[in-house]
Amino acid sequence: MMRRLLQPLWVLLAIIFLIEAWLWDHLEPIVAWFVALIPLHAFKQWLAERVDSLSPAMTLIVFIVPVIPLFPLKLVGFWLLAHEYWISAVLTIIFAKFLGVGVAAFIFDVTRPKLLEMAWFEKLYQFVLALRAKAKALVEPIRVRILDLLRGDGEGWSSRTLRLIQRFRKSVREAR
Image (cartoon, rainbow, N blue to C red; front, side, top):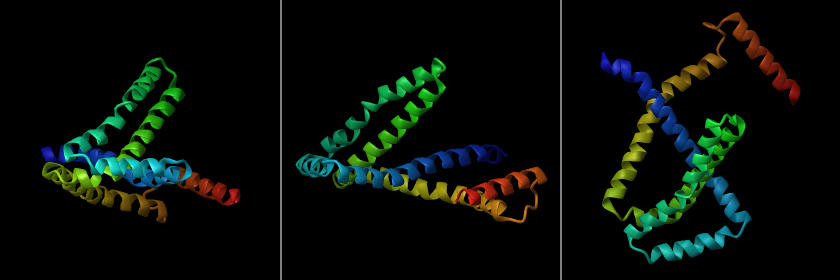
């Protein structure tokens, strides 16, 4: 009974986790693109050389410290939200989120080999990967059901919803 009541919460947490994982996966190539655009490639090489000379524990500090300055940016976003500057607040929070994930992905790419030398970090990393797989397995049936509904013949859909979908599809085709 309790498990059934908690199912929506677990699905929501799985979706949030997968969104974070998706951001991580998709921001890493964007960060790599920026590295190629600006002289961050040289910085990445320099950082990798410095990380090689550090102990794994010091490498953990290198991984954590760059994300700390982004915290005040998120606070600014929440201050804007509290003062009803809705668009500025949302844009600031989203910018801070994307920047944070991008910086973390960049730094993690450089520090991963050293961090994985610590047994507890490797266990945590494997746990997160397993959690990601479980979250994907939990959300997958819901995703498939939604896609089936969107591709389906409209069974279970109201006629108004079907008209809206048809208008949207038509507008997309006309825009091409």
